[in-house]
Image (cartoon, rainbow, N blue to C red):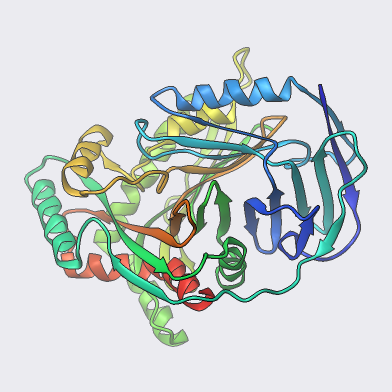
Length: 410
């Protein structure tokens, strides 16, 4: 049996500015300067298939059974942590990682968790480093024009009544002449998109604004985004755009499908839920979204609901798939001409008590094994009122966080 120790540490430096025991950063989950950064890998595995969420639960509990946990900090996110990045489609591999060392920070408190009986690992400030190399971008599965044709085809299917909404994704390939620094990408995203959840799990990196599910004791929260408009860069102009987004029948329709799918998925497990009547406009650095926070309280039953069951019930939501789900999935298979991998899948962390935060892997990219190229993704919700040219512009805006991070940092 291995010892897992958590103890408070002093200092005001954010976790990403620190380095533990000269290990590489392996996992992150950071928002507004707080969160979790993992170093090295104590254990890792992959799961696959329709039972991947249950298999992940089984593996996590098997690992916990081998640990003698000594936690002097307590609270959500302390102690041993499982970082997970699930595939969008069950036929693809999902990744599970338990870091060797974790540094966490929340509400002014910092802590370190490590596996082993040795003394606390050495912590030091990271020295600044510059990324070198030249980045070249090329089309992924479809060119811009080809993707617009697929959007038009999806709109036609919706107008014929085959389905109500489908989310079509696209990809772009970035090639760098030098190794891409994951830490520099994470640093750029946390600085420029602070209100998103910036994640790294098994070389999938991104800054997602969408929270699939947070479980804190019995309180469940989900942030749904659907309906997007690109920012103008002018404060007055952006206020006018936000007002138009809030009144857009096309975007409100898209948003309603997404909220309804989440509320319906949570209702069997909750004694009460709160679904706001209308969305708010979430302002990000590059775009604005219609957003709704759905909350609920889990049923007090003899068969307790855990976060793995909630993830399985919520994924895929209409925000990343469409409505009805099965038909939308088949349209995605027909039209996208690419493998999503872990893009648009659940990503985040789970602690030993079952609490956790799981986002949707949006605004993200997958590093190649040699770390010299990255496949970046974006997706758009298509409804009857969608226009292919507008959807292309929206997809380009959603590629911007990762594209800019690669251009500036590489």
